[in-house]
Length: 437
Image 1 (tube, rainbow, N blue to C red):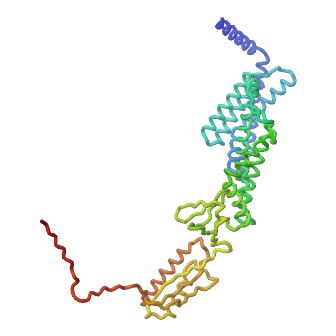
Image 2 (image 1 turned 90 degrees about the vertical axis):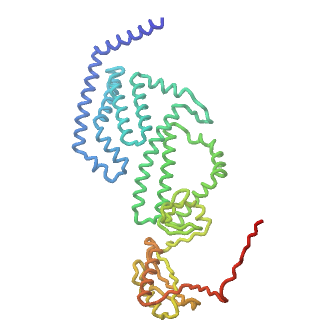
């Protein structure tokens, strides 16, 4: 009996399809589809001839440039989907046709194809691309067979009440899709604004980082609020979770919150900023990045030291470049008593003055500091104007030139010499007799 029912249903469907294919409404829709296809090709060719994607996207972020390029390449399909959708709405509204099934099918397929092309061109994650493609074809298929509204109603019929909020599978799908699109747009806009702020010459590096973080945070909050409102969710429904969130922030996330607040304080008071050379505890290096939770310090040997922001607020920090990039360098050396100390100081000052990267705003100075047992001790001080070249590099250059100058002038550098003298003849030797029985 069931097989007979299936056969009857198939025969009815075939007869309905045959009747539809020989009806004038089918050929009218087919003519509209052909006309829309020809018009879309003509309009797309006209746009490509008149509008250059390169000039149109100049100055925009890379994702928007890619989006404009894809839209221009797929302009014919986009125009075709729009024209068929408009034609179906017109013929149904004017009651020329009751449903416009063929026009609806063409519009759904064209829309699904355009969405898949956009996802393929803009999304790098293969799994996400496949998910978007499968979803687009499923929605198009449901729309073609007229079951899209039924499936939506079925997904909306199952719900879990959370206070004033009614959570349904349909609501979750809407929020996930909308939030994904919103976050993608927020990321593009954030990168664009970050590039503009970073190029501003009127803002210090710390203020630039602070503005970038505030802008990104505001964009995220705005995107979340817009998505929730568009999905029909009252934001006051989340008041139930505010107490739990407060407790979590107070106990479980206190270090994260402390580091976040400390990061804001550091950016606001400008005590440290990207590019500064700092020393905190046993760690020294140049600040390469300031993040929400920590700062990254490049140690100069390939290491990146991540220091929590709270440590920079609560501990003693040496900022070598707080006011300027000048640094006083001291070189200690010694000579024997045969050398002329005046000549030694003159040689040292001349060498330091002629060494590259030694500052000229203040002349080097050499002092005789001590008459020691092994010789005379001197202290040579000079300023390095730019710490980016490295104070140790400049110190090494000065010491190498000092060594060469001392050899040329026959100035000796003292070093300890130890002599061992043995008195009273040979040393006593202990004799060990091994007696074996």
